[in-house]
Amino acid sequence: MDAQNPTEAAVSPFATDLHIGNSLSRKKERFVPLNSPYVGMYVCGPTVYSNVHLGNVRTFLTFDVVFRYLVHLGYRVRYVRNITDVGHLTGDSDDGEDKIGKKARLENLEPMEVVQRYTNDFHDVMRVFNILPPSIEPTATGHIVEQIGMIEEIIANGFAYEANGSVYFNVRKFAESHDYGALSGRKIDELQNQTRALDGQDEKQDPLDFALWKKADDSHLMRWPSPWGIGFPGWHLECSVMSTKYLGRTFDIHGGGMDLKFPHHECEIAQNVGAHGEKNPVRYWIHGNMLTVNGRKMSKSEGNGFTPDELITGNHKLLEKGYSPMTVRFFMLQGHYAGTLDFSNPALQAAEKGLERLMSAWGLLAELAPVEEADGIESAPDLDGLRDRAYAAMNDDFNTPILIAVLYDAVKVVNSVAAGRMALSAEGVESLRSLFEVFGGDILGLEQETSTGGDDDRTDGLMGVLCDLRAEAKANKDWATADLIRDRLADMGVQIKDGKDGTSWTFD
Ligand code: AMP
Ligand code: ZN
Image: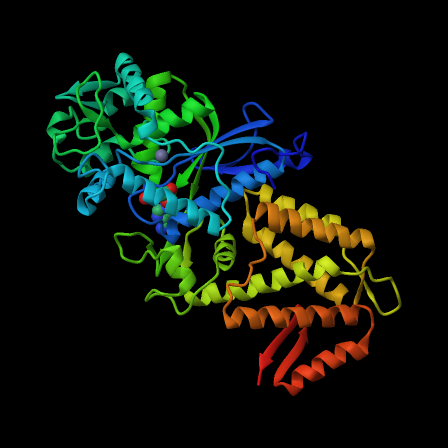
């Protein structure tokens, strides 16, 4: 699928039923783009100061499926996902050192070497998990001029002030005329009580205020001239600037992890409104929930965040074995994006088996021959009904677990037809193929994995070939060949068993 250039000339009729769980209204709302067939979507990208962990992958996977589905529906999607390469401080607020600057200092590198190294890593990981690239991937350092411009607009509108070479957003002033906290549900007075006194906060008129521009001292590695002196932009500003630059002052969808709702996204809204005056700069906010380990958010600082590399090799204390990227993708898609998802070895192993079932049925479809109606042979269920249920699942706020359940129903049909127990016309075989290709491939992004060359993989591959041949022999009522394969394998100590969901095997 070429996501950037959808071939569909028109938007699908199924698009009219798409509902999105909007975290701003806290309701599921029908999706009506501002300017159909165009859709603008902005997603907060990574801060490139370390390797991405599996938690990050979950968030980018969530929006990959949203992107894929919108493209499938025929929308022309401009998907912007930024790279944060300056301004994100270790305190996640206005305190601490710049994360990238700190890494550069510790490793004696140019900050841009750090940025390049982890941007490359991020891209490699996205590719491994079959997460599509966005249409535009802008960087914060590439948009310093625009960030200075936006600060000037906010100051001109009276919502920001300069203090000692830094510029701060005046939250109380903004809240007099706007609903600050609408997205995160925080009340300004409660926030006041929670705010700690931090370094440099004395420059702020109020501890609630946040930095738009920070003065850089001589030790700071990344710094730029500005009307307020040498400094660097605040973290929240880049997303306001890059989203509106590429998608307009009001745009359709803004996404990110749940942990970014406050302060990051709340501040983004305040900046956009403060600069441009549009009341609702983002029409649909989508927040992906967290990947947890034993109930705790996976994160670098918790020490429970393993990298995709560790996951694939199994080389981490939390992992009983290695798991393939498609197994992980499937595991994540088995949960709805808005719920937390807890990582565990048994859950991954169950996903591995589930995916194998799905992929082997999909593999069978390539060669599946139609089966004629006859006495004692079941008729196939209504395949349009299956397709409609698949759309209904995706239209209900991108409900991938329900979609997977629909695909399992299709697996049962494939296996029954392959075993010669169910009749299916050539047209029916074609609709099953298209169901798997569209929903399994284009939308869920699942793909057959090539063997990594290990003995286990090779055995699985060989057994898969033999089982496929046997299923085909049975479909052709060639019982002699089917029995021959079973008996010769039994002689070698391999037992194969036909279950209702296909064939499995065990070694003696
Ligand atoms: P960062 O590089 O820390 O700015 O994070 C990049 C993205 O990953 C953000 O959208 C975060 O919300 C998201 N993220 C971080 N940790 C997790 C997690 N444990 N589960 C899901 N998403 C996460
Ligand atoms: Zn952002």
